[in-house]
Length: 328
Image (cartoon, rainbow, N blue to C red; front, side, top):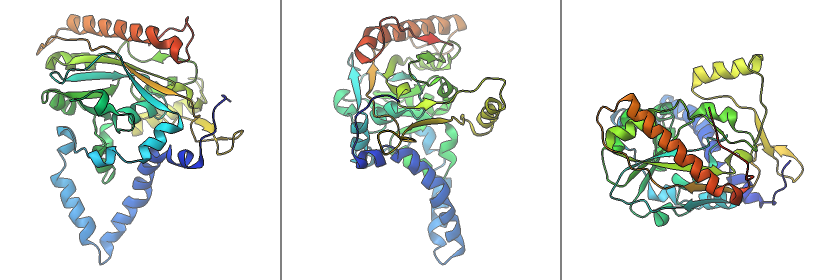
């Protein structure tokens, strides 16, 4: 088990607030909402579902962010638990739109969530004039109540229409995509820097079509906050994980961290520093129908920029001088 500081109990309880909120909304609030349809309070859920239908397209049009939700004090407790910080290497001009690659995925993507979905680390002050959006699985936005909660934090759908809409409006929009996707979660174990990127080129094509600048980022420490149990590809457990991924859109990872006492295991992440380094933007030309050769060219330039960013900062944030990014 890693050596770490001992957070206070309030921080320990609040650090898992956002995933637990999703679970509470899905398994508790939604069933209660449905039960209300059969009581004298039936107009409340009925009105919401009417609103839900009328509001169906909002997630594809940038969502409905709330400065109040993004500034909740709970996010500062989450930030201080690890702590989580963001490091700017270059200014981002509000005269452009940006497509940001978020690496690595990690288990619960604490760094990207805290830095881009809240104001706990001061994103708006560090990058004035830039409006961040973090893209996630599209089916979240089909779930009543959950969709409203995540939209309030500036989360958007990872679907092509949504990203295209945001990059064609602005300027000053920044869309963050966890390029490795949920499949990269299985690569998220301590002391590894393996990214699923070599075959993932769709984000480059969209950036070219809209003339958006590509921004590489790397979050040091994201893979360190949980241990994960890995299974051989021939095992039934791995096959179940693959089936779960095909059915629900994400992997069923078996992971553990610390408990409430120092020497116990549990679901709390290890309180180790998480640092998101935002690299220099890579300008792209606007090409409505880019060729595969053009996509490959800028995809290679992006990987080179990401490697350069990692190499420049790795020794300052816990990696050895010989550590290299591995692209799969």
